[in-house]
Image (cartoon, rainbow, N blue to C red):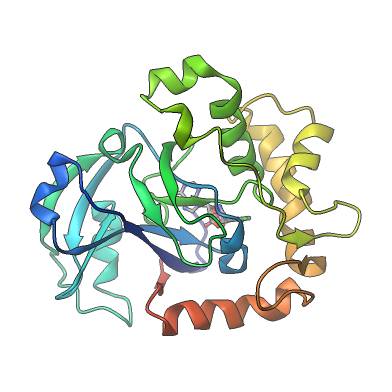
Length: 253
Ligand code: A2H
């Protein structure tokens, strides 16, 4: 990990009722999967959320109304964020694993899709961000390949108990146009580099190098209220809007 602090936007993905029995004690409260992103302007294109199946998570009380599902490490870090009144030892209401989260229906800010599902990704790190990742497969090669694995491999879905209807209806949603890369940059770069699965870490690192900077520096948004404007310009605007609306929080580590 670098020495530079990372300033993430944590997106509040609201869990839809009815809750599964393991989360029954949370019924009546507002429960969110808390996903850390560096690209809040891509939230229009969310197709799902990612969790690590074997990862350890917890449901933590963050204030009178909100409960966040994230790693214990991230819950502790919340105590040091401007926004929160989370104590240094936040109360864990329910201990969970990634398996408990797979298939949960979520409503996420800005997403064109009304409901998205939590799905397994094997490369999620539990010592970065919140351990929950929001998936934007048009613009993130990691997200593109992880969704591709689930869509194209029924045995992979079966292994993690993923139902077809959580995955197959979700097409990737063009949101940003990048000169020379089009409006599905991650798909193009993964094809150009002949990446076969989410496990090809070196090739994916190269794909990320190719897309991330270009998307940020040269991309133009093609959806939403900031349609036609440069990614660089609208990123801080979208971030502030989400935070002011109570749909996201600022999180550094
Ligand atoms: B980004 P950095 Cl569209 N494990 O969000 C693995 N990956 C994680 C993570 C974790 N625990 N926490 C966050 N991330 C991902 C969107 C996105 C992201 C797009 C394009 C680029 C991009 C949608 N996924 O990241 O190592 C999240 O994916 C470019 C770097 O802290 C988060 O932002 O620099 C990014 O990695 C943070 O990575």
